[in-house]
Length: 128
Image (cartoon, rainbow, N blue to C red; front, side, top):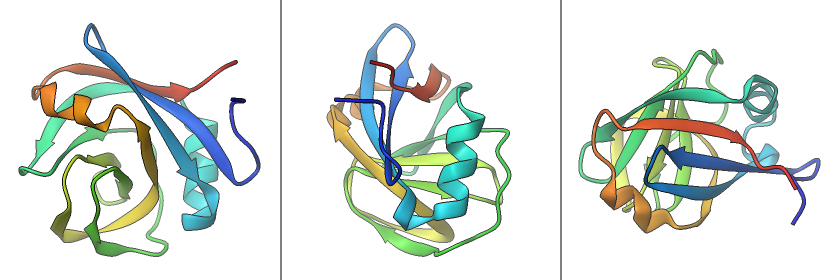
């Protein structure tokens, strides 16, 4: 599979020393934000727990809220513009803040169950 297309971009969430999770950012969900994210990768940071349904990674990326929502399904990826954070859901969830949907986890979403707060991560574009 190639690194992406105009409408979709393949990215990897790598948990250092543990696993690589294949993700897909979808431009149609939030065109401006997804474009900004792709141009800003790679992002390095640490994992934080998002209640019992997901994890998040803070970033340096700033963006306003496009189409936000508060309900997400297992495998969804969203962005919190206030905290500049990527949110990865491993369970269906209702959250208290408005998040911007940006994509889906396409492989290994259950690997998120094995991460701990403080684990080092990198989010980068998949190449070849």
